[in-house]
Image (cartoon, rainbow, N blue to C red; front, side, top):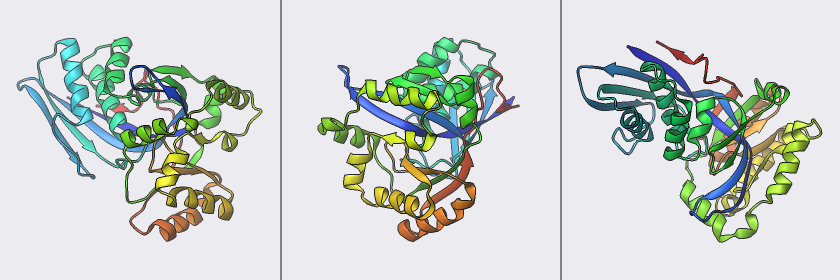
Length: 303
């Protein structure tokens, strides 16, 4: 039996890092939205074999135990005492080192897919496994826009009107030819403590947006802007150029290097021209929309 899933990319419409925790990680508040654009994941049971076999295509990645999707499958099998072979195939479209959550989405997709494949309904266990894999993994279990807090394990669903207002929003994604290390970005932020956001201020801004008092483009904010912009000035300069030329508000997603712009889709041709002009023909560009795949109904899974 084979299961195929869509593993969406995500964007951080708001990413506020509020401080460093005693365990060395950081607390954050983020409004996160999954996208229609993403990777394709296929899982196949192999009852007569043992072990995990992983194959990737599209973007060169490790196909061994250091791949997050492999680790997700291994953790799932250990948790539920499964001794069976598994074939994993990932068609990679989400750029790596981009802040779009590609690796985390694939790992969460493995957990979701294995849950369906083996008929295991244990949301708490899946959340624990996802949190152990990385801060972004839990949000992909839900597959819907939400607010993420703590290390990323505290997930707050959006109310109906806010959720519906995001779904279908047009998004232009673009990324330079280089990636940015998340580890480096957090270290740079920790070294410049003045970049930490006030949790109270961020929550007030979120409340204003949820109450309809703040337009979505005015909500866009990323704590990594200053440290990343200082090292890679081409990123803020491009976003400023896009805003000046098209009126579309843009932001870097996660710790970068991918960015996005919101606005009328008829402006995206011009945005693509600007991206190519500033970052070269090798720059990544993709038009997509915010989506809401959900978890409980498995609408993105086919067998």
